[in-house]
Length: 445
Ligand code: NDP
Image (cartoon, rainbow, N blue to C red; front, side, top):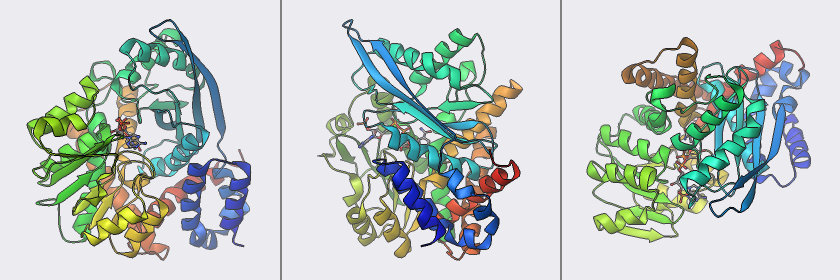
């Protein structure tokens, strides 16, 4: 049995029932076999055994009072996974499906993603099984205050800097920042994704979606083409999907689908102009359902379905994990899809990802393709430290260059380690090498 297989077996035994975490670890370990062969020092220093074990796992009670005066109890998490490259960094997810296995999968991915950005940040992730859907603003505020009432003692501008993820946008970051400031009496860059007038960075809201499209653009370049005239299927209709759609529109492509947990809309004329503005209002202000788009613009709505049956040139899965399976991958391939860039974290099942690679569909794995969000969070941290605010153009240019570099470094690593064009292997290896070397340099800690 190979070393990586042995370590994977230990991970299964030590972390029972955490299937998303197992999936994320397996994908990385499968890529590392040739690296371990070339670098015996990683085995000697037990780097892989150490990297799969979080440095710290925090779980806590989050009690809060609803609008009817009833007491509610949720569970909060923060996984501080790896700090070899810098303070822990990674978002907070509020969604009823959240449990330890989801947060550990996201935290583990974050280590390699953050390394790929070339910025000095470690990996972490957190969240709660709280569901913001259907809650009043006051309920969301009371929940966020209670959540931060515990989290504050574990985080700090040089320790651990959370951001948003599913269910955590500007509103939630604001409530949590306010509570952190009140408890600690410190105005510091402890969260990213802050409001623009109180320490946020321009382009942070756009960054993950824009980044996933910049990454796809690089993959298309390798194939000698670009977004102009391409039909694009996007899933989700939250932060990542919204700005991926805007960037595709700017680059001359046409986004024909969006979705939420209720179903998807198909608009063959494209989600563009006033229709895109409508989505922004619907999802960020009204907090409504994507089906309302179909009612308003008279296009088709497919309840309970995902958009992958629609013919497209490029697919941008941007909702959640395991939302595109092997059968759906086959349909996309048969329909002539040439590139898939993961806006979400691990949206393609392992079978789907393998099918894309085997069938020469350009495939950008989430830890590379959606790294633009955390990269821009790191830029927000730099601006906070300097007490400066850069212009939109400055931040966007830095983001664009970071995405070009992630693509190049992943491609180079794939070629060097015997898997040319396989960006899954390339991203895992390139991300791992930097962290592994730093862990050796810093001794057994
Ligand atoms: P949002 O909460 O803004 O939007 C999430 C979207 O995905 C919503 O449309 C939501 O629909 C849909 N969705 C969520 N869960 C499910 C589900 N189980 N089934 C079907 N649809 C679902 O989140 P983001 O856009 O921020 O995040 C989307 C993905 O991108 C996540 O995987 C996240 O980890 C990843 N990501 C986000 C980053 C960021 O900067 N925000 C950075 C890097 C990655 P509904 O409203 O009905 O639940």
